[in-house]
Length: 446
Ligand SMILES: *Cc1c(COP(=O)(O)O)cnc(C)c1O
Image 1 (cartoon, rainbow, N blue to C red):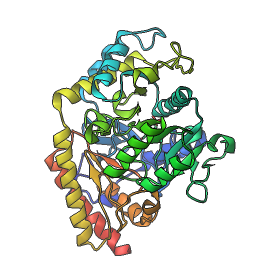
Image 2 (cartoon, helix red, strand yellow):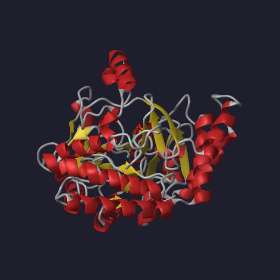
Image 3 (cartoon, helix red, strand yellow):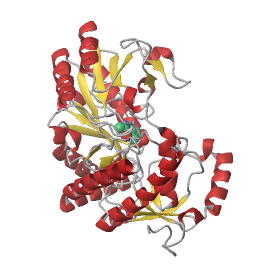
Protein backbone atom coordinates (compact mmCIF):
# COMPACT_ATOMS: atom_id res chain seq x y z
CA UNK A 1 0.00 0.00 0.00
CA UNK A 2 1.54 3.31 -1.03
CA UNK A 3 2.15 5.89 1.64
CA UNK A 4 -0.58 8.50 1.48
CA UNK A 5 0.45 10.51 4.50
CA UNK A 6 3.47 10.56 6.77
CA UNK A 7 1.44 9.62 9.84
CA UNK A 8 -0.42 6.58 8.57
CA UNK A 9 0.67 4.82 5.43
CA UNK A 10 -2.27 2.40 5.52
CA UNK A 11 -4.87 5.17 5.60
CA UNK A 12 -7.39 4.67 2.74
CA UNK A 13 -6.45 6.95 -0.12
CA UNK A 14 -9.78 8.75 -0.45
CA UNK A 15 -9.53 10.02 3.11
CA UNK A 16 -6.80 12.57 2.41
CA UNK A 17 -7.86 15.71 4.17
CA UNK A 18 -7.50 18.93 2.16
CA UNK A 19 -9.42 21.30 4.44
CA UNK A 20 -6.66 23.89 4.93
CA UNK A 21 -5.59 23.66 1.29
CA UNK A 22 -9.14 24.36 0.15
CA UNK A 23 -9.50 27.35 2.49
CA UNK A 24 -6.22 28.92 1.42
CA UNK A 25 -6.97 28.36 -2.24
CA UNK A 26 -10.44 29.90 -1.88
CA UNK A 27 -8.77 33.02 -0.43
CA UNK A 28 -6.21 32.99 -3.27
CA UNK A 29 -8.99 33.09 -5.84
CA UNK A 30 -10.12 36.45 -4.43
CA UNK A 31 -6.64 37.92 -4.67
CA UNK A 32 -4.90 36.35 -7.67
CA UNK A 33 -6.53 35.54 -11.03
CA UNK A 34 -7.67 31.92 -10.74
CA UNK A 35 -5.78 31.68 -7.44
CA UNK A 36 -2.51 30.93 -9.26
CA UNK A 37 0.51 32.86 -10.46
CA UNK A 38 0.91 30.50 -13.43
CA UNK A 39 -2.05 28.76 -15.11
CA UNK A 40 -0.33 25.36 -15.42
CA UNK A 41 -0.91 24.87 -11.66
CA UNK A 42 -4.66 25.49 -11.78
CA UNK A 43 -5.86 21.88 -12.35
CA UNK A 44 -7.69 23.25 -15.42
CA UNK A 45 -7.18 20.01 -17.35
CA UNK A 46 -8.24 17.65 -14.56
CA UNK A 47 -10.76 19.53 -12.40
CA UNK A 48 -10.71 19.80 -8.63
CA UNK A 49 -8.82 22.17 -6.35
CA UNK A 50 -5.05 22.69 -6.52
CA UNK A 51 -3.14 21.50 -3.47
CA UNK A 52 -1.35 24.21 -1.48
CA UNK A 53 2.17 23.06 -0.65
CA UNK A 54 4.11 23.66 2.52
CA UNK A 55 7.56 22.19 1.86
CA UNK A 56 9.63 19.84 -0.23
CA UNK A 57 12.17 17.26 0.90
CA UNK A 58 14.06 14.95 -1.46
CA UNK A 59 11.45 13.11 -3.58
CA UNK A 60 8.51 14.42 -1.53
CA UNK A 61 6.19 17.39 -1.38
CA UNK A 62 4.18 18.06 1.81
CA UNK A 63 0.94 20.03 1.66
CA UNK A 64 -0.34 22.39 4.37
CA UNK A 65 -2.69 19.67 5.66
CA UNK A 66 0.31 17.43 6.35
CA UNK A 67 -0.20 15.02 3.42
CA UNK A 68 2.91 13.71 1.71
CA UNK A 69 3.27 13.17 -2.05
CA UNK A 70 5.88 11.54 -4.23
CA UNK A 71 6.72 14.34 -6.63
CA UNK A 72 6.89 13.62 -10.37
CA UNK A 73 6.98 17.28 -11.43
CA UNK A 74 9.91 18.79 -9.54
CA UNK A 75 8.56 22.34 -9.91
CA UNK A 76 7.94 21.61 -13.63
CA UNK A 77 11.54 20.68 -14.27
CA UNK A 78 14.12 22.43 -12.09
CA UNK A 79 14.38 19.86 -9.27
CA UNK A 80 16.22 17.09 -11.08
CA UNK A 81 18.09 16.48 -7.81
CA UNK A 82 14.92 16.41 -5.72
CA UNK A 83 13.92 19.09 -3.22
CA UNK A 84 16.41 20.74 -0.90
CA UNK A 85 19.54 19.01 -2.12
CA UNK A 86 22.00 19.80 0.69
CA UNK A 87 24.63 21.27 -1.65
CA UNK A 88 22.12 23.59 -3.31
CA UNK A 89 20.51 24.71 -0.06
CA UNK A 90 23.91 25.46 1.49
CA UNK A 91 25.02 27.47 -1.56
CA UNK A 92 21.84 29.55 -1.46
CA UNK A 93 22.25 30.28 2.25
CA UNK A 94 25.88 31.30 1.77
CA UNK A 95 24.96 33.63 -1.11
CA UNK A 96 22.11 35.28 0.80
CA UNK A 97 24.51 35.99 3.65
CA UNK A 98 26.63 38.11 1.29
CA UNK A 99 23.68 40.08 -0.13
CA UNK A 100 20.75 39.35 -2.41
CA UNK A 101 21.50 41.64 -5.36
CA UNK A 102 24.20 44.12 -6.31
CA UNK A 103 23.19 45.56 -9.68
CA UNK A 104 26.87 45.18 -10.55
CA UNK A 105 28.93 42.26 -11.84
CA UNK A 106 29.69 39.38 -9.46
CA UNK A 107 32.06 36.43 -9.90
CA UNK A 108 29.28 33.84 -9.72
CA UNK A 109 28.01 35.09 -13.11
CA UNK A 110 31.29 34.04 -14.74
CA UNK A 111 31.25 30.74 -12.96
CA UNK A 112 27.75 29.73 -14.15
CA UNK A 113 28.43 31.12 -17.65
CA UNK A 114 31.62 29.03 -17.83
CA UNK A 115 29.73 25.90 -16.78
CA UNK A 116 27.06 26.51 -19.43
CA UNK A 117 29.61 27.21 -22.18
CA UNK A 118 31.56 24.07 -21.25
CA UNK A 119 28.43 21.90 -21.17
CA UNK A 120 26.27 22.99 -24.09
CA UNK A 121 27.84 22.34 -27.53
CA UNK A 122 26.21 25.30 -29.33
CA UNK A 123 26.99 27.94 -26.71
CA UNK A 124 30.17 30.04 -26.95
CA UNK A 125 28.71 33.05 -25.14
CA UNK A 126 25.67 33.28 -22.88
CA UNK A 127 23.44 35.96 -21.35
CA UNK A 128 21.49 35.28 -18.13
CA UNK A 129 17.83 36.25 -17.74
CA UNK A 130 15.24 35.69 -15.00
CA UNK A 131 12.94 33.24 -16.78
CA UNK A 132 12.68 30.92 -19.75
CA UNK A 133 10.22 33.31 -21.37
CA UNK A 134 12.76 36.13 -21.30
CA UNK A 135 15.35 33.78 -22.78
CA UNK A 136 13.23 32.76 -25.80
CA UNK A 137 11.94 36.29 -26.34
CA UNK A 138 15.50 37.60 -26.38
CA UNK A 139 16.86 34.81 -28.57
CA UNK A 140 14.18 35.58 -31.16
CA UNK A 141 15.10 39.27 -31.07
CA UNK A 142 18.80 38.49 -31.50
CA UNK A 143 18.12 36.09 -34.37
CA UNK A 144 16.05 38.74 -36.11
CA UNK A 145 18.69 41.40 -35.51
CA UNK A 146 21.46 39.11 -36.73
CA UNK A 147 19.69 37.99 -39.92
CA UNK A 148 17.88 41.31 -40.52
CA UNK A 149 14.74 39.26 -41.23
CA UNK A 150 11.35 39.17 -39.46
CA UNK A 151 9.77 35.79 -40.14
CA UNK A 152 9.79 32.83 -37.77
CA UNK A 153 8.85 29.17 -37.84
CA UNK A 154 7.51 27.43 -34.76
CA UNK A 155 5.76 24.09 -34.31
CA UNK A 156 2.22 23.46 -33.09
CA UNK A 157 2.18 22.22 -29.50
CA UNK A 158 5.67 23.54 -28.63
CA UNK A 159 5.61 26.05 -25.78
CA UNK A 160 8.30 28.70 -25.51
CA UNK A 161 6.95 30.80 -22.66
CA UNK A 162 4.37 33.57 -23.07
CA UNK A 163 6.24 35.49 -25.77
CA UNK A 164 3.79 37.44 -28.01
CA UNK A 165 5.22 36.27 -31.33
CA UNK A 166 5.24 32.63 -30.15
CA UNK A 167 1.75 32.48 -28.61
CA UNK A 168 0.30 31.58 -31.92
CA UNK A 169 -1.92 28.91 -33.46
CA UNK A 170 -1.71 27.56 -36.96
CA UNK A 171 -4.01 29.40 -39.35
CA UNK A 172 -6.20 27.33 -41.66
CA UNK A 173 -4.08 25.66 -44.34
CA UNK A 174 -0.55 24.47 -43.69
CA UNK A 175 1.41 27.55 -44.71
CA UNK A 176 -0.81 30.46 -43.70
CA UNK A 177 0.33 33.08 -41.25
CA UNK A 178 -0.22 32.30 -37.60
CA UNK A 179 -3.11 33.78 -35.64
CA UNK A 180 -2.75 34.95 -32.03
CA UNK A 181 -3.75 32.26 -29.53
CA UNK A 182 -4.45 34.87 -26.83
CA UNK A 183 -6.32 38.16 -26.77
CA UNK A 184 -3.96 41.08 -26.27
CA UNK A 185 -1.60 40.07 -29.06
CA UNK A 186 -1.95 42.08 -32.28
CA UNK A 187 -2.42 39.94 -35.40
CA UNK A 188 0.39 42.02 -36.91
CA UNK A 189 2.80 40.50 -34.36
CA UNK A 190 1.97 36.87 -35.13
CA UNK A 191 1.67 37.50 -38.88
CA UNK A 192 5.42 36.92 -39.05
CA UNK A 193 5.14 33.50 -37.41
CA UNK A 194 4.50 30.36 -39.46
CA UNK A 195 3.22 27.37 -37.48
CA UNK A 196 4.06 23.88 -38.74
CA UNK A 197 3.36 20.36 -37.50
CA UNK A 198 6.19 18.83 -35.44
CA UNK A 199 8.09 16.01 -37.19
CA UNK A 200 6.65 17.05 -40.58
CA UNK A 201 9.71 17.30 -42.86
CA UNK A 202 7.66 17.95 -45.96
CA UNK A 203 5.89 20.97 -44.46
CA UNK A 204 9.27 22.33 -43.38
CA UNK A 205 10.77 21.91 -46.85
CA UNK A 206 7.72 23.50 -48.42
CA UNK A 207 7.92 26.51 -46.08
CA UNK A 208 11.56 27.20 -46.99
CA UNK A 209 10.94 26.52 -50.68
CA UNK A 210 8.06 29.00 -50.87
CA UNK A 211 9.89 31.74 -48.93
CA UNK A 212 13.63 31.26 -49.55
CA UNK A 213 15.90 33.45 -47.46
CA UNK A 214 13.00 34.96 -45.50
CA UNK A 215 13.10 33.16 -42.18
CA UNK A 216 15.12 34.68 -39.35
CA UNK A 217 14.74 31.66 -37.08
CA UNK A 218 13.21 28.28 -36.49
CA UNK A 219 12.51 27.62 -32.81
CA UNK A 220 11.58 24.25 -31.34
CA UNK A 221 11.69 22.07 -28.27
CA UNK A 222 14.23 19.43 -29.41
CA UNK A 223 12.21 16.94 -27.36
CA UNK A 224 8.75 18.33 -26.68
CA UNK A 225 7.48 18.31 -23.11
CA UNK A 226 4.70 20.81 -23.47
CA UNK A 227 2.13 18.75 -25.43
CA UNK A 228 3.04 15.66 -23.48
CA UNK A 229 6.30 14.02 -24.47
CA UNK A 230 6.96 14.02 -28.22
CA UNK A 231 10.24 12.74 -29.61
CA UNK A 232 11.70 14.11 -32.87
CA UNK A 233 12.63 11.76 -35.68
CA UNK A 234 16.24 11.70 -36.77
CA UNK A 235 15.10 12.78 -40.24
CA UNK A 236 13.25 15.79 -38.78
CA UNK A 237 16.34 16.97 -36.86
CA UNK A 238 18.62 16.52 -39.89
CA UNK A 239 16.15 18.33 -42.17
CA UNK A 240 15.94 21.24 -39.73
CA UNK A 241 19.71 21.57 -39.45
CA UNK A 242 20.28 21.32 -43.22
CA UNK A 243 17.54 23.76 -44.24
CA UNK A 244 18.59 26.36 -41.65
CA UNK A 245 22.20 26.15 -42.80
CA UNK A 246 21.22 26.38 -46.45
CA UNK A 247 18.98 29.42 -45.93
CA UNK A 248 21.05 31.30 -43.34
CA UNK A 249 18.26 30.84 -40.78
CA UNK A 250 19.12 30.72 -37.07
CA UNK A 251 18.17 27.33 -35.60
CA UNK A 252 17.10 27.81 -31.97
CA UNK A 253 16.78 24.84 -29.65
CA UNK A 254 14.56 25.80 -26.75
CA UNK A 255 16.18 23.64 -24.07
CA UNK A 256 14.54 25.40 -21.12
CA UNK A 257 13.10 21.99 -20.20
CA UNK A 258 15.58 19.55 -21.76
CA UNK A 259 18.83 21.38 -20.93
CA UNK A 260 20.84 19.52 -18.25
CA UNK A 261 17.95 17.02 -18.08
CA UNK A 262 18.18 14.66 -21.07
CA UNK A 263 21.93 14.71 -20.61
CA UNK A 264 24.31 17.21 -19.03
CA UNK A 265 24.67 18.91 -22.44
CA UNK A 266 20.93 18.67 -23.16
CA UNK A 267 19.09 17.26 -26.17
CA UNK A 268 21.72 18.63 -28.55
CA UNK A 269 24.40 16.53 -26.90
CA UNK A 270 22.12 13.48 -26.78
CA UNK A 271 21.24 13.74 -30.50
CA UNK A 272 24.54 15.14 -31.76
CA UNK A 273 22.80 18.03 -33.56
CA UNK A 274 24.17 21.51 -32.88
CA UNK A 275 21.76 24.45 -33.22
CA UNK A 276 22.90 28.07 -33.72
CA UNK A 277 21.32 29.32 -30.51
CA UNK A 278 20.01 27.67 -27.35
CA UNK A 279 17.69 28.82 -24.60
CA UNK A 280 17.91 27.47 -21.06
CA UNK A 281 16.04 27.84 -17.77
CA UNK A 282 14.56 25.59 -15.07
CA UNK A 283 17.50 23.32 -14.02
CA UNK A 284 20.16 26.03 -14.47
CA UNK A 285 18.48 27.97 -11.66
CA UNK A 286 18.14 24.95 -9.37
CA UNK A 287 14.71 26.21 -8.28
CA UNK A 288 15.53 29.93 -8.34
CA UNK A 289 14.24 32.17 -11.18
CA UNK A 290 16.83 31.92 -13.98
CA UNK A 291 16.86 31.69 -17.75
CA UNK A 292 19.68 32.02 -20.27
CA UNK A 293 20.25 32.25 -23.99
CA UNK A 294 23.44 31.69 -25.87
CA UNK A 295 25.01 30.63 -29.13
CA UNK A 296 27.95 31.26 -31.39
CA UNK A 297 30.02 34.27 -30.33
CA UNK A 298 29.41 35.94 -33.69
CA UNK A 299 25.65 35.89 -33.03
CA UNK A 300 25.86 36.76 -29.33
CA UNK A 301 28.05 39.78 -30.12
CA UNK A 302 24.89 41.36 -31.56
CA UNK A 303 23.67 41.81 -27.97
CA UNK A 304 23.86 45.15 -26.15
CA UNK A 305 26.22 46.67 -25.01
CA UNK A 306 28.66 45.22 -27.61
CA UNK A 307 26.03 45.02 -30.34
CA UNK A 308 22.88 46.88 -31.37
CA UNK A 309 20.23 44.39 -30.13
CA UNK A 310 18.91 45.66 -26.81
CA UNK A 311 18.22 43.28 -23.93
CA UNK A 312 18.56 43.89 -20.18
CA UNK A 313 17.45 42.84 -16.68
CA UNK A 314 17.71 44.54 -13.26
CA UNK A 315 18.02 41.20 -11.46
CA UNK A 316 19.67 39.21 -14.27
CA UNK A 317 22.73 37.31 -13.07
CA UNK A 318 21.40 37.57 -9.51
CA UNK A 319 24.02 36.22 -7.06
CA UNK A 320 21.62 33.97 -5.14
CA UNK A 321 20.19 32.48 -8.35
CA UNK A 322 23.70 32.01 -9.77
CA UNK A 323 24.82 30.21 -6.59
CA UNK A 324 21.81 27.90 -6.79
CA UNK A 325 22.54 27.12 -10.46
CA UNK A 326 26.25 26.54 -9.90
CA UNK A 327 25.57 24.17 -7.00
CA UNK A 328 22.97 22.26 -9.05
CA UNK A 329 25.26 21.81 -12.06
CA UNK A 330 28.18 20.88 -9.80
CA UNK A 331 26.08 18.20 -8.11
CA UNK A 332 24.96 16.90 -11.52
CA UNK A 333 28.60 16.63 -12.63
CA UNK A 334 29.70 14.90 -9.46
CA UNK A 335 26.77 12.54 -9.04
CA UNK A 336 26.13 11.88 -12.75
CA UNK A 337 22.56 10.70 -12.08
CA UNK A 338 21.72 10.39 -15.79
CA UNK A 339 22.15 6.62 -16.24
CA UNK A 340 20.14 5.95 -13.08
CA UNK A 341 17.42 8.44 -14.12
CA UNK A 342 17.13 6.80 -17.53
CA UNK A 343 16.96 3.32 -16.00
CA UNK A 344 14.26 4.34 -13.52
CA UNK A 345 12.25 6.04 -16.29
CA UNK A 346 12.59 3.04 -18.65
CA UNK A 347 11.24 0.73 -15.98
CA UNK A 348 8.49 3.17 -15.00
CA UNK A 349 7.39 3.33 -18.66
CA UNK A 350 7.45 -0.46 -19.05
CA UNK A 351 5.53 -0.88 -15.81
CA UNK A 352 2.87 1.72 -16.65
CA UNK A 353 2.46 0.30 -20.14
CA UNK A 354 2.01 -3.24 -18.84
CA UNK A 355 -0.59 -2.06 -16.32
CA UNK A 356 -2.50 0.00 -18.89
CA UNK A 357 -2.60 -3.08 -21.15
CA UNK A 358 -3.74 -5.27 -18.24
CA UNK A 359 -6.66 -2.89 -17.65
CA UNK A 360 -7.54 -2.75 -21.36
CA UNK A 361 -6.63 0.91 -21.83
CA UNK A 362 -5.27 1.96 -25.25
CA UNK A 363 -2.16 4.04 -24.64
CA UNK A 364 1.40 4.89 -25.55
CA UNK A 365 4.10 5.72 -23.05
CA UNK A 366 6.96 7.62 -24.73
CA UNK A 367 9.97 8.38 -22.58
CA UNK A 368 13.48 9.69 -23.03
CA UNK A 369 16.04 10.34 -20.33
CA UNK A 370 14.03 11.30 -17.25
CA UNK A 371 10.97 12.57 -19.15
CA UNK A 372 7.84 10.46 -19.61
CA UNK A 373 4.15 10.80 -20.58
CA UNK A 374 1.40 8.19 -20.40
CA UNK A 375 -0.86 9.15 -23.31
CA UNK A 376 -4.39 7.74 -23.25
CA UNK A 377 -4.12 7.56 -27.01
CA UNK A 378 -3.59 4.42 -29.12
CA UNK A 379 -1.50 6.24 -31.75
CA UNK A 380 2.15 7.19 -31.47
CA UNK A 381 2.13 10.92 -30.78
CA UNK A 382 4.36 12.56 -33.36
CA UNK A 383 2.87 16.05 -33.12
CA UNK A 384 -0.05 18.18 -32.07
CA UNK A 385 -2.59 16.69 -34.51
CA UNK A 386 -2.23 13.26 -32.92
CA UNK A 387 -1.74 14.55 -29.36
CA UNK A 388 -5.08 16.33 -29.32
CA UNK A 389 -6.98 13.06 -29.80
CA UNK A 390 -5.84 11.81 -26.38
CA UNK A 391 -8.56 10.86 -23.90
CA UNK A 392 -8.25 13.68 -21.38
CA UNK A 393 -11.18 12.36 -19.30
CA UNK A 394 -9.25 9.16 -18.66
CA UNK A 395 -6.15 11.16 -17.82
CA UNK A 396 -8.10 13.29 -15.31
CA UNK A 397 -9.37 10.16 -13.57
CA UNK A 398 -5.87 8.71 -13.51
CA UNK A 399 -4.44 11.94 -12.12
CA UNK A 400 -6.92 12.10 -9.24
CA UNK A 401 -6.54 8.40 -8.53
CA UNK A 402 -2.80 8.88 -8.19
CA UNK A 403 -3.16 12.07 -6.14
CA UNK A 404 -5.43 10.30 -3.64
CA UNK A 405 -2.75 7.64 -3.31
CA UNK A 406 -0.02 10.18 -2.55
CA UNK A 407 1.50 10.66 -6.01
CA UNK A 408 1.82 14.14 -7.41
CA UNK A 409 1.67 14.06 -11.23
CA UNK A 410 1.44 16.88 -13.76
CA UNK A 411 -2.18 18.07 -13.78
CA UNK A 412 -2.66 17.72 -17.55
CA UNK A 413 -2.42 15.02 -20.21
CA UNK A 414 -0.35 17.51 -22.20
CA UNK A 415 2.68 17.64 -19.92
CA UNK A 416 5.74 15.50 -19.41
CA UNK A 417 6.55 14.01 -16.01
CA UNK A 418 10.00 14.42 -14.56
CA UNK A 419 11.86 11.75 -12.67
CA UNK A 420 14.24 13.08 -10.02
CA UNK A 421 17.48 11.61 -8.72
CA UNK A 422 15.91 11.43 -5.25
CA UNK A 423 13.60 8.58 -6.35
CA UNK A 424 14.58 5.04 -5.37
CA UNK A 425 13.64 1.47 -6.21
CA UNK A 426 11.12 1.52 -3.39
CA UNK A 427 9.41 4.58 -4.91
CA UNK A 428 9.14 2.81 -8.26
CA UNK A 429 7.37 -0.12 -6.62
CA UNK A 430 5.09 2.27 -4.72
CA UNK A 431 4.30 4.23 -7.91
CA UNK A 432 3.39 1.14 -9.93
CA UNK A 433 1.25 -0.28 -7.11
CA UNK A 434 -0.70 2.99 -7.02
CA UNK A 435 -0.94 3.08 -10.81
CA UNK A 436 -2.40 -0.46 -10.85
CA UNK A 437 -5.28 0.70 -8.64
CA UNK A 438 -5.71 4.07 -10.36
CA UNK A 439 -5.78 2.51 -13.84
CA UNK A 440 -8.34 -0.06 -12.64
CA UNK A 441 -10.55 2.93 -11.69
CA UNK A 442 -9.97 4.50 -15.09
CA UNK A 443 -10.99 1.25 -16.82
CA UNK A 444 -14.18 1.07 -14.69
CA UNK A 445 -15.49 4.38 -16.02
CA UNK A 446 -14.32 3.75 -19.58
C1 LIG B 1 9.02 26.34 -19.10
C2 LIG B 1 9.38 26.60 -20.50
C3 LIG B 1 9.56 27.90 -20.99
C4 LIG B 1 9.21 29.12 -20.18
O1 LIG B 1 10.01 29.28 -19.07
P1 LIG B 1 9.47 30.23 -17.87
O2 LIG B 1 10.60 30.23 -16.90
O3 LIG B 1 8.22 29.57 -17.37
O4 LIG B 1 9.19 31.56 -18.46
C5 LIG B 1 10.03 28.06 -22.28
N1 LIG B 1 10.30 27.00 -23.04
C6 LIG B 1 10.13 25.73 -22.61
C7 LIG B 1 10.49 24.61 -23.52
C8 LIG B 1 9.65 25.49 -21.33
O5 LIG B 1 9.45 24.24 -20.94
